[in-house]
Length: 216
Image (cartoon, rainbow, N blue to C red; front, top):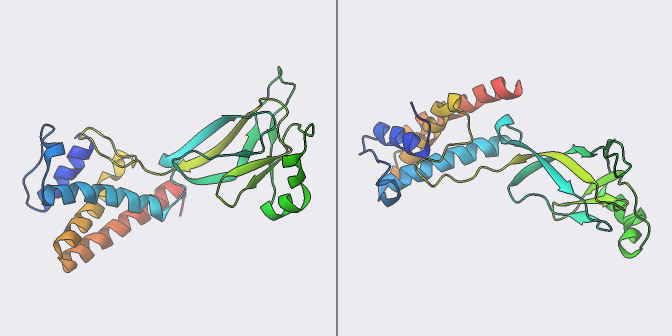
């Protein structure tokens, strides 16, 4: 069985005894069909809100540092960052060995080191990483060369839109997504009892995912 936005939506429509969609009319859906499409995205969003560290949302970012620049912006799709994973990659050309950065509290940075942002010729290989109040990050000292910075982070789900889009949740957990989407579909209809039954099953499926994927 295929695992696309169209397939999941049709599973929900079948449970609701509604007419299935096709690849050709998927974007022209109307009424309750659109609500079932929305329910699939709602279910996937809820799964990701329950945990910020699902393995299937993990990604590694590589940032080429800019000489003299202290502060940097995280990727737009970031849900959470593992600050313990920031490191400078080994580069013989730049004369740097692999370095794991230490976490520096932002207040300590502003009290002790922020002068670097108004001072020239104090750059070096960064040794500290700090999280800024706007949820980005900064380095101390600022880089004096274009080092490669790497770190691990977890992505937000991208909303499904095309019929052929594939959910980020692995296919083995498709029924968890379907249970959640079915619950939301019943909620849209105002059927509280059926919503409660399906949402409980959805929650149980998420707990099983946590046990299998996160050892909980």
